[in-house]
Image (tube, rainbow, N blue to C red):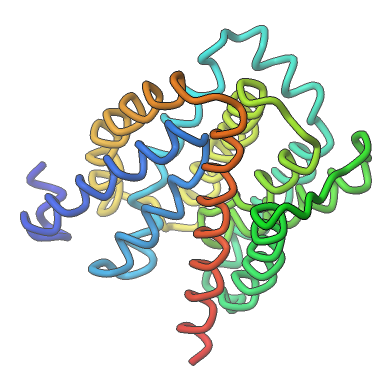
Length: 257
């Protein structure tokens, strides 16, 4: 605790914990959005590098919990089904993490945020975008975009969720698959940012401190998830996806200006 207060104030710590609870709640309800909420909240009072460090460990724990909620066998089956997406995404995530201090983040935010926003708006307006069966080429393309974006900003959910929705993935399967995809991505992100220097002795205590409030929020969100049906889940997912896309575009514009 005292180590955390060396880099942020007690008041900022309280606000950060509240952000973590909200981030966990959103993830518990729709399966994604935790990094988006973390970054949006943290960036209002923390520098970008510290905000990214703060979300790494709670995101790792939350995703592993989500992946194994229905047991290791179900998680392994999901990993096999989406192996192309996962493998390509992991490679590009590691590449993206090493380019945090080189490549302008606004460019990737805009490239991902624009199509995701359009996809969510079309779906919410009743115009469905569907994929007929799984294609390795599409899986690799989306995995590459999601992974690279995740390495740069810690946010890889929007393109992944758009892909799963376009495949028509059922509610429970979508939650588990997201957990597997994000869980493996979170492991890679943690390792990558120990290497990049974002996660180090000074920033590690902050990330550790955010784990408990994030898990609490996720538990509350999980209770809500269990009570909603497929239609409501899909709509809630699209609304969060639209917010995520608009937030990415907003951040891109701010950084560009």
